[in-house]
Length: 188
Image 1 (cartoon, rainbow, N blue to C red):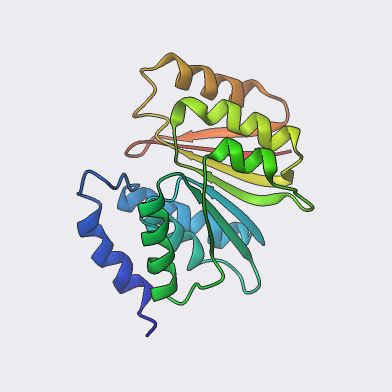
Image 2: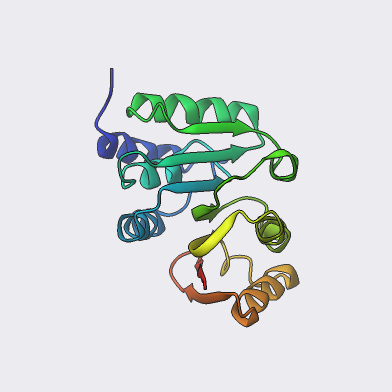
C-alpha cells in the first residue's frame, strides 16, 4: 500500500531525533525540495541516504521519468531507506549500499547527473566533487548541494572546501546560512 508522501515525511520528523539518523532540518529539507522543483533534474545522485528523509523530499519533486540514485554505506540504513521509498511509491529509486569512493570508481557514467546532494562524511566533500569532475559525472548546469557547511565550518577541511568551491571558475557558488548550512553550487 502506497502512503501519502507528505504524511510519511511528517512521521519521519520523529525519527530524525534518534541518534542513528542525521537527517537535515525541516527548513533545509523544504529548501532542497524547492531547488529540485525549480531545477527539474532528470538524473539525481544523493550521497548519504540515512533513512531516506532527504531523498523523499527530492523524489516527491522529481519530474516523471527522472532517475534517482542514492548511496549509503550503512546496510541497515540503506535497507530502511529502500522500504521508505517503496512505501511512498518510489520503487524506481535506486539505493546503493556502498562506500562512496568504491561506488564512484566502479560506476560507468554515460550521462552526467543534473543534481547532486552531498550529506555524507563532510571531510570528503572536496574529494567527492573531484571524482565527480574527473569521471565527467557533472554537466554544464548541474547543481551540487552540500549539507553541514556551517555546522562544520570550524574545521579546516570545510573552510578549504567552501573556499575551493567559491574560487573555482567552473562553479558558481553560494552558501545558504540557514540551520546547518547548505552550499549550493552550479556548474558553468
